[in-house]
Image (cartoon, rainbow, N blue to C red; front, side, top):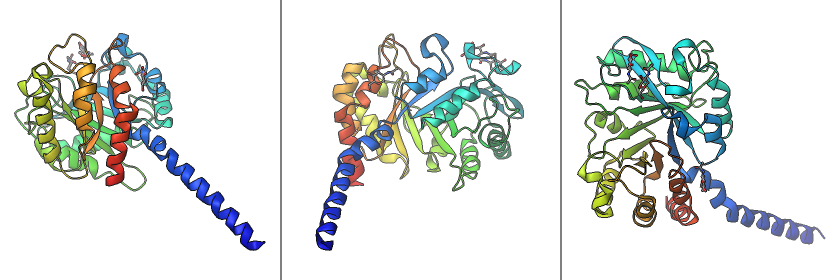
Amino acid sequence: MAAAYSQSTKSLLLGAFSLLLAFSPLIRSSEACGISVYWGQNLAQEGSLRELCETGNYSYVNLAYLSTFGCGQKFALNFTDHCDAASGGCKSLSTELQACQNRGVKVLLSLGGNDTRYNQLCSAQDARNVADDLYNTFLSGSNSDGPLGDVSLDGIDLDIEYPGSVNYWDYLVEALASYRTPEKNVYLSASASCSYPDKDLGKAINTGLLNHVAVRFYDDNPQCYCSAGAERILQTWNGWSSSLPEGNQLFFGLLPNSNAGSQCTPEVFTTEILPVITSSPNYGGIMLRALYKDISTLYPAAACSNEALHRRQSLISVL
Ligand SMILES: *[C@@H]1O[C@H](CO)[C@@H](O)[C@H](O)[C@H]1NC(C)=O
Ligand SMILES: *[C@@H]1O[C@H](CO)[C@@H](O)[C@H](O)[C@H]1NC(C)=O
Ligand SMILES: *[C@@H]1O[C@H](CO)[C@@H](O)[C@H](O)[C@H]1NC(C)=O
């Protein structure tokens, strides 16, 4: 009797276990898609944060931008027509931000977007001061008077695209990473130029402290011109992939704009690029630099397709 009981328990357990196995690709798929998207610079195309997160398509939202910081300047946010931070108008974003986080979306504040006069770091000490201010204002969760109200963002993204004469970004990254604790991770990402190494962020990337780096495959640079064929693009991707510090993830950055002729169309991306990049050991996902309603949804659909996920899944199980 007892033996029969334990036999049936065993098969029940076995059944539950294989069920779990069968579903594990699905459980993992949401993180495996790993789509990161910028939000804040185009109200008409992007819609609200809430809508964006409710699509369920995005794992990371980069709030664009903290456009003024560094060299002793007071922080200024610029979310264009979404809200006016200077008059306190962006505090109301906090409920939407929390709704995003409750869905498992990581919300990062993206640094950049203005010209170099308004966002550069003047010294190592300045970098550390900016890191402290960023943590206290946006990450700590204990500054309800801050420009985004009562939020605790998940991390910081660096979108530094203007050539600066000085370079202290590695100090900023190190100082931000020093706030990581077992209770609170500080997620760090950056967008990098298509050509390796990124002349502004190379040192910051080499710290190995960034969780992911998204390469801009829309830079005005022959190494990124999809119109010249996928081969060149994949060469550039492979160069980045083999140079990235261990444990960091690589994202393929896209600017889904039907008017931008030199970059990969959804067709080329789906058939020629995605099958190759999803086989790189450090592939993490794709980054959408902007949303355009007519075309953007095609890329998530490709990156989250069963095939792409399957390749990603076999990659994970090999690791
Ligand atoms: C915000 O950035 C946009 C460019 O993206 C610029 O046109 C606008 O003047 C900026 N607004 C402020 C208040 O700086
Ligand atoms: C850059 O920031 C400065 C100072 O906050 C502001 O006056 C200027 O309008 C900003 N420019 C853009 C393009 O955002
Ligand atoms: C979300 O992704 C699905 C495919 O996975 C796609 O059909 C849908 O259009 C996407 N929606 C948005 C708003 O990106």
